[in-house]
Length: 122
Image 1 (spheres, rainbow, N blue to C red):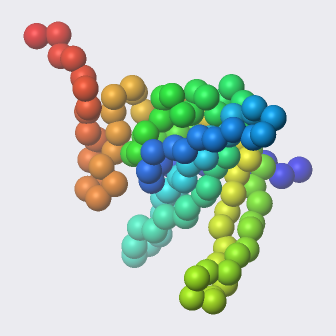
Image 2 (cartoon, rainbow, N blue to C red; image 1 turned 180 degrees about the vertical axis):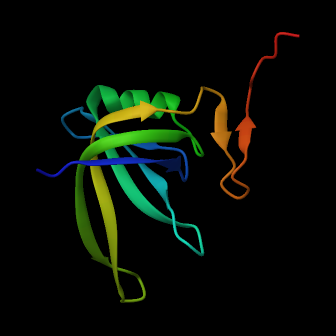
Image 3 (tube, rainbow, N blue to C red; image 1 turned 90 degrees about the horizontal axis):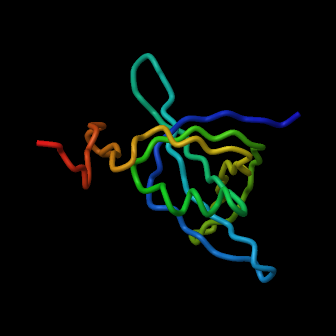
Protein backbone atom coordinates (compact mmCIF):
# COMPACT_ATOMS: atom_id res chain seq x y z
CA UNK A 1 0.00 0.00 0.00
CA UNK A 2 1.32 3.46 -0.94
CA UNK A 3 -0.28 6.15 1.24
CA UNK A 4 1.26 9.31 2.66
CA UNK A 5 -0.10 11.94 5.05
CA UNK A 6 1.60 15.34 4.98
CA UNK A 7 0.89 18.73 6.53
CA UNK A 8 2.48 21.85 5.10
CA UNK A 9 2.09 25.31 3.62
CA UNK A 10 1.57 26.19 -0.03
CA UNK A 11 4.68 27.76 -1.56
CA UNK A 12 2.61 29.67 -4.17
CA UNK A 13 -0.95 29.93 -5.46
CA UNK A 14 -2.39 26.72 -6.96
CA UNK A 15 -2.56 26.29 -10.75
CA UNK A 16 -5.47 24.69 -12.59
CA UNK A 17 -5.97 23.26 -16.06
CA UNK A 18 -8.29 20.86 -17.83
CA UNK A 19 -7.61 17.64 -19.69
CA UNK A 20 -8.88 17.38 -23.29
CA UNK A 21 -11.76 15.36 -21.82
CA UNK A 22 -12.77 18.27 -19.54
CA UNK A 23 -11.45 16.92 -16.22
CA UNK A 24 -10.14 19.66 -13.89
CA UNK A 25 -6.63 19.25 -12.46
CA UNK A 26 -5.16 21.50 -9.75
CA UNK A 27 -1.49 21.40 -8.77
CA UNK A 28 0.38 23.09 -5.94
CA UNK A 29 3.58 22.64 -3.96
CA UNK A 30 3.68 22.07 -0.22
CA UNK A 31 6.61 22.89 2.03
CA UNK A 32 6.59 20.32 4.83
CA UNK A 33 8.83 21.25 7.78
CA UNK A 34 11.21 18.63 9.09
CA UNK A 35 12.38 18.78 12.68
CA UNK A 36 16.11 18.56 13.21
CA UNK A 37 18.43 19.08 16.14
CA UNK A 38 20.42 21.96 14.69
CA UNK A 39 18.43 23.41 11.82
CA UNK A 40 14.93 23.54 10.48
CA UNK A 41 14.61 22.14 6.97
CA UNK A 42 11.67 21.45 4.69
CA UNK A 43 10.74 18.84 2.10
CA UNK A 44 8.78 19.98 -0.95
CA UNK A 45 5.96 17.90 -2.39
CA UNK A 46 4.14 18.58 -5.66
CA UNK A 47 0.44 17.80 -5.09
CA UNK A 48 -2.11 17.02 -7.80
CA UNK A 49 -5.86 17.07 -7.11
CA UNK A 50 -8.51 15.98 -9.63
CA UNK A 51 -12.14 16.79 -10.48
CA UNK A 52 -14.25 18.38 -7.69
CA UNK A 53 -11.36 18.29 -5.22
CA UNK A 54 -9.29 20.24 -7.78
CA UNK A 55 -12.02 22.88 -8.08
CA UNK A 56 -12.21 23.31 -4.30
CA UNK A 57 -8.43 23.60 -4.02
CA UNK A 58 -8.30 26.25 -6.74
CA UNK A 59 -11.15 28.18 -5.15
CA UNK A 60 -10.07 28.18 -1.51
CA UNK A 61 -6.27 27.77 -1.40
CA UNK A 62 -3.55 30.41 -1.79
CA UNK A 63 0.13 30.83 -1.06
CA UNK A 64 0.94 30.34 2.63
CA UNK A 65 -2.22 28.41 3.53
CA UNK A 66 -1.75 25.29 5.66
CA UNK A 67 -3.28 22.01 4.41
CA UNK A 68 -3.20 18.31 5.20
CA UNK A 69 -2.96 15.99 2.19
CA UNK A 70 -3.50 12.24 1.98
CA UNK A 71 -2.62 10.30 -1.16
CA UNK A 72 -0.15 8.12 -3.06
CA UNK A 73 3.43 9.41 -3.35
CA UNK A 74 5.82 8.87 -6.26
CA UNK A 75 9.37 9.94 -7.03
CA UNK A 76 9.93 11.48 -10.45
CA UNK A 77 13.36 12.17 -11.90
CA UNK A 78 14.20 14.74 -14.57
CA UNK A 79 17.10 16.53 -16.23
CA UNK A 80 17.60 20.19 -15.33
CA UNK A 81 18.51 22.88 -17.87
CA UNK A 82 22.14 22.72 -16.75
CA UNK A 83 22.25 18.99 -17.56
CA UNK A 84 22.27 17.74 -13.97
CA UNK A 85 19.67 15.38 -12.61
CA UNK A 86 16.84 16.33 -10.32
CA UNK A 87 14.01 14.60 -8.49
CA UNK A 88 10.62 15.60 -7.16
CA UNK A 89 8.18 13.99 -4.76
CA UNK A 90 4.65 14.01 -6.15
CA UNK A 91 1.43 13.21 -4.32
CA UNK A 92 -1.77 12.24 -6.12
CA UNK A 93 -4.25 13.61 -3.57
CA UNK A 94 -7.16 11.55 -2.32
CA UNK A 95 -8.04 14.13 0.33
CA UNK A 96 -7.06 17.74 1.03
CA UNK A 97 -8.09 19.26 4.34
CA UNK A 98 -7.88 23.04 4.66
CA UNK A 99 -6.28 23.87 8.01
CA UNK A 100 -5.89 27.66 7.75
CA UNK A 101 -9.04 29.69 8.33
CA UNK A 102 -10.20 31.56 5.25
CA UNK A 103 -8.34 34.84 4.89
CA UNK A 104 -5.39 33.62 6.96
CA UNK A 105 -1.99 32.52 5.71
CA UNK A 106 1.57 32.13 6.94
CA UNK A 107 4.32 34.52 5.87
CA UNK A 108 6.89 32.08 4.47
CA UNK A 109 9.85 34.32 5.42
CA UNK A 110 8.96 35.12 9.02
CA UNK A 111 6.68 32.16 9.83
CA UNK A 112 4.12 34.57 11.31
CA UNK A 113 0.38 34.33 10.71
CA UNK A 114 -1.02 37.04 8.44
CA UNK A 115 -4.72 37.91 8.40
CA UNK A 116 -5.96 39.15 5.03
CA UNK A 117 -9.32 40.69 4.16
CA UNK A 118 -10.65 40.01 7.63
CA UNK A 119 -13.64 42.06 8.73
CA UNK A 120 -13.37 42.97 12.39
CA UNK A 121 -16.78 43.41 14.12
CA UNK A 122 -15.84 46.66 15.86
